Amino acid sequence: MSDTMTIEMRGISKSFGETLANDGIDFTVGSGEIHVLLGENGAGKTTLMNILFGHVRPDEGAILVNGDEVEITAPNDAISHGIGMVHQHFSLVPSFTVAENVMLGVKRVTDPSFGEETIEKEVSQRADELNMPITPDATVQDLPVDVQQRVEIIKAMYRGAKTLILDEPTSLLGPTQIENLLGILSQLRDRGTSIILVTHKLAEVMEAADKVTVLRRGKVITSMAKGAFDERTLARAMTGHDRERLPDRSEASGAARRPLLEINDLVVPATHGHGLAIEGLSLVVQSGEILGIAGVEGNGQRELVDALMGLATPGSGTVLVDGVEVTNADPHDRRGAGMGVIPEDRHRLGLILDMSLAENLAVADLASGRYRRRGMIDWKAVHQNAERLLVDYDVRPADPDAAAASLSGGNQQKVVLARELAREPRVLVADNPSWGLDVGAIDYVHLKLLEMRGRGGAVLLVTLDLEELYKLSDRILVIYRGKKMLEGPTSEIDDDDLALAMVGRSTR
Ligand SMILES: Nc1ncnc2c1ncn2[C@@H]1O[C@H](COP(=O)(O)OP(=O)(O)OP(=O)(O)O)[C@@H](O)[C@H]1O
Ligand SMILES: [Mg+2]
Image (tube, rainbow, N blue to C red; front, side, top):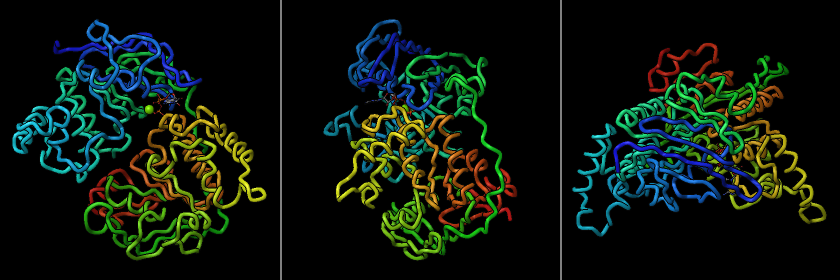
């Protein structure tokens, strides 16, 4: 195999039932370029990459590597042709060490040379060569998400990847981690590796892309080289129209403000490891207010949201929704008190993947009896409700009978949103509500959160995305190692205050 590599996908088509996910796609990736694949939720990006990596078989089309047609029917074929993939949901074995994970599948565990010291040395050497130092004997589950991702990259490179596919690798990362990843990718590019980067974030495209290919509804709309595009042309190419402007932010309806969410001296033990993830946190969100929680990933945000959802038991402290204590209430009673939650991980907590969209949209209300008629579930009402919500929230396909598992990532997120917001909760906990969404859908989510604020609801927005934080929050609270580091009105907190507080330094 030569050192450089060109990949050509020609006339690729793939349908799932009635959905034409890829419609005659031509896609060429040259040697040593960062090629961004851009498109709205459901445009067909993951499908195309799954075809290239051998997870999915196309109905039509051919794949050429360095001009020769190749058969890719399984990931192993792709790997043998020098194609590697870093999945959004990592495929590492959590209880294995870094070195074991990298070696797994390359060397048999029973191979005498699979000795701890040899593989650790080998992996560490390879990682250093790639300029991605790691601790080879660390256990993967103890590593932060960005380091786990680096292990995935090293693993793919160790298998000889000359073209590396990354499907939305930045959606789980904070700003500094994103910078680091983009740095790693450009270094790999400079050494001749081709990178295919799937992302929704236009700022990342502007920073990293040598070329961009835009998909819309399964077709290639355009393919451009650096210099030929800016954020606006890209957004236009993706959606077919200009971005909608958010309404000017009015003062939230002044009608007597009252605290809707109160957290007093909350203590929550860490999910992983020992100690406390939240250490005596107090905050209040008023009616008509959005409080943004900022912080570097892993400073207690996950545990805070878990405690609010009833998934983690606080060690002490209280949580009140509109004056009613829900500290230890079950999820049903929390909802009853007026709380809604948009969880970050829609797979873990958001959707039941093998159920239909109609069932997913109704699931919380089925228990409460809303859809009961003479003791029976009124499936017609469930269906009609779903039809309306799917259209309102622009879910594609807007088919109540489709299985949740068959939707693209972004469309799944829209279903979770529709379900939570349709109930018009008084208090909404939104944990990174726009991750994985395309620009159009992000605008839509932001609009919905602002609408809720306008109605006098309270929103606790936990986000790693600083643009989102500044745009939506009335006040900002920075959390560092489970404690409040900084709190104030958004207008009084500048980038420096925020950055320092996020690394635990106080400016005031
Ligand atoms: N296994 C499947 N069964 C049925 N339909 C599917 C399946 N996989 C994908 N689809 C459909 O194909 C279309 C393209 O999906 P794909 O996951 O490729 O989109 P995407 O561009 O990656 O979107 P996102 O940005 O939301 O991840 C969607 O309409 C999706 O519902
Ligand atoms: Mg996708």
